[in-house]
Image 1 (cartoon, rainbow, N blue to C red):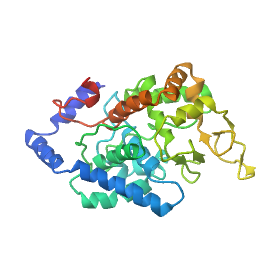
Image 2 (tube, rainbow, N blue to C red):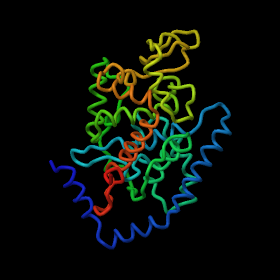
Image 3 (cartoon, helix red, strand yellow):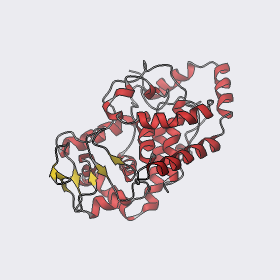
Image 4 (cartoon, rainbow, N blue to C red):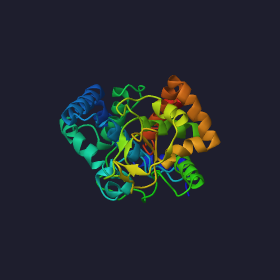
Length: 313
């Protein structure tokens, strides 16, 4: 099986010099600032329309994440290139339930800026969501191409699951998924800090509730709560027995954690990083920006002369 470098080189050889110049010309026509402003305006308008304290912020981060998280460093397959979540099989993966809402919300922006690829638009929406919610600036570069179908999508099962039946199996699953993409333990914890945003929905994942009391604000609150709160198995919901999958709740019953979240304080190595981020938001922001930018570029055949920003320093 070819290694990642060989795969990347092979991918680049698929483009002639003429095609690469045409691709660069198309990217130069994209006004990244205006596209970002349009996404930010969309988030604000949608939140005002909802009027219930929820927004597209967490959903856009999840869209960008799940477009990218199928990558495997072993053969270079998967990743954010292609915008393949528009098609089956990815559109119907259980882990992507509910993301049709995010894709549909971005259609007017794609129509307004047809020069940007779906693959760039979907990942950029996550960047804008992080920044608009008070998070760090995430470096972003254009260059993802759209596929015409889902034929090159990898098999289902590459995205992280919330529960593998026991704490040890869940911990190992988390490591297996992220190590397959090329992330180390510190990067894993940083990326899971995105759970500061959004909430779970019973009609999508089966789980219920937000991780924090400020689900539209990017912060280190997720880590602080993990360390300081007392988390117990959820037994009831709205006065009735809880019939959903196993999850945890805080003392108020209004916040939740998934088994994969609790795994971060059950594993000694993960917990060390959790405690660092709980105490120092600046460190978390810096680490998250770097790891998230790396995630969004997985599987993208950028020209070899263009060094990923996170490898410059």
